[in-house]
Image (tube, each protein chain N blue to C red):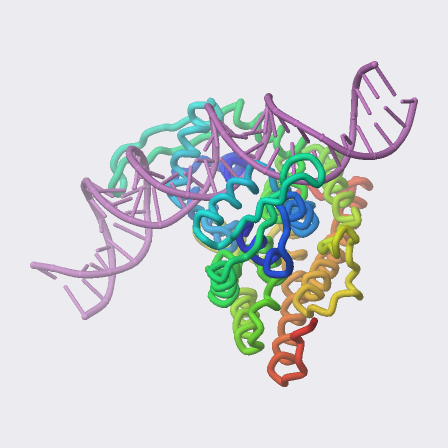
Length: 181
Length: 181
DNA sequence: ACGCAGTACCTCGATCCCGATGTATCGTCA
DNA sequence: TGACGATACATCGGGATCGAGGTACTGCGT
């Protein structure tokens, strides 16, 4: 998730670590803060892997800034992660939102629609949250208001997102282009 | 999150590792599967910490089953985690749902309401997902349909959950008891 | 007779993540 | 003058997580 966001932000514009951190914090920080001690090693990792290039730009304010740019391999990797996401990217809300935030970089509307359809398929899978022994429990059987709340909220979320997904997939299909920018 | 769920399930009834795994998979597995190699070390950790007791029950089917029970320390720890959750338990949806799934074990309606109010306060915090330089961008300024989707879905979810929270807090307050069971 | 899926438990190594801590400069407010 | 917060980068150690693999038995289908 972190790496996807880094690739996505750098696809927009070169940034130094600190600027990246600001954007990451705005995107997912309110839900899951990103520690500096996670970001910098990640950048090093990705640089070693050839996804990022680092241009040291001395002076300015305080320490020398390392301006990071996406390499061609990095762009390819971004497209790969967006176009053929792993299951967790589809199922986990945080990861899914991160992916959505950069899906426009996929460019091909059909490929974008395919990704949205995977999420739609996941949302339409029946899911049972609680078991009584081995038997799954339905919402109406729960006398726990908090557990009922989980189901209530999950259903409302599912409905809203399903509607948005269908709408957007349709728009992508008709060529009523949703490519933006 | 894992440990909270373990404490919560064992509060309901003693279980062996495999049964625990079944329940964990039902609760959060569709979003984030729990690997066995995460569960068993976690159980060992918690047993060492004195939160769990293990009764070896030989035979039955195949390998000897280790039936796990919550100790008194374990119950105290569960109440502590439910009553004074850390920020991540409030902000991260997965963790929050896990907490909700066991909030009834807190028993005191006022304490339950206090936890719900923390989530409510978080949902009412203004949040900006995207930056243009340093300036936060509002939904209407986005020409990216996917990013607009993030905001659309997040708003719908927020509204549904806020409504449910207010309702439930009110019910807890009036003593129109929501304690269930 | 054999394989395979399910039940049930466990270990190892690689990787990732995080809190604490350190370095250094700049601008602002008191 | 001095404290503080923001900018900017980095390391270290401890801990959590995971995939791959291993052990062992039962029961079903073919």
